[in-house]
Length: 366
Ligand SMILES: [Zn+2]
Image 1 (cartoon, rainbow, N blue to C red):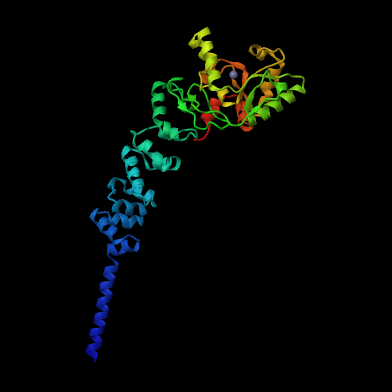
Image 2: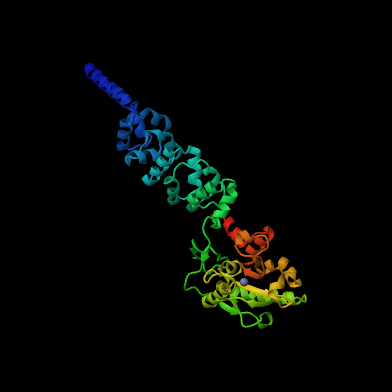
């Protein structure tokens, strides 16, 4: 009997010893950290067991190992970003690190750039001032190469100007390298020498301007028309006579107008003050040429109506579209008589900051 008890005791002791040896093994500890058996095997193969035990669990590391994306040099990275379960994502992390970006750089990139857009960076060489670019809210990653090229050609310009100018397409050639406008019905639509209306575009909410405020039958898009009538009526109550002389034009009209100017004055001159067809704001139904009580729109800037309009048009959502001193930006000569509806909020911002529609849009968050 005594002997039996002794054997039992020995067996229990043996089991306890074996168990405690097992518990103290690294594999058991890894298992306890939540790594799968397959991952544990890979951890052992990569000889990173001690380091992993030190750092704990990382979903990112597990995903990297299982998908054969593990790169020993990026070990710490897998712990800085612990929760990634997508191997494409890890591929991008690996590339960013390989390109030379620090953990902090990568954190910034992931914070500012959407997953699909990271390719703009991974497909590039290391960009030492990427951090500076990313600090601007109006930085548009899809234009990254354009910013870089523009900066190379204009090394004297600061980053803010580089981003602003490229956002305004100043790295392109007017009329040659243009975009087709996609937000045609947006009241903030930009139509200029870099942005062309689609061939078939015609606004579908044209309304007739009150005949009291127009020299002939003229149309504007509804929102612009309502505000224009209101503005003219308020001006009239102050004894100021604002009259529209030209507003919505269809493509054919604009084409004839531009062609006639080109024949009369030559194309270079015509491009200064007249838009080529489909590049004209008048085709959006949001622009109006106006005259004052002197009934000469060319001399509009010397009228009381103009003085009033300068400080009041924004209250109705209008801006003076081609201001003096901004010819380099609008690419048009100063036109006191050409106003454009952009909506009240945008007009106020443009007025308060003394900027153009081009700058306003180029400053928007991307
Ligand atoms: Zn005009």
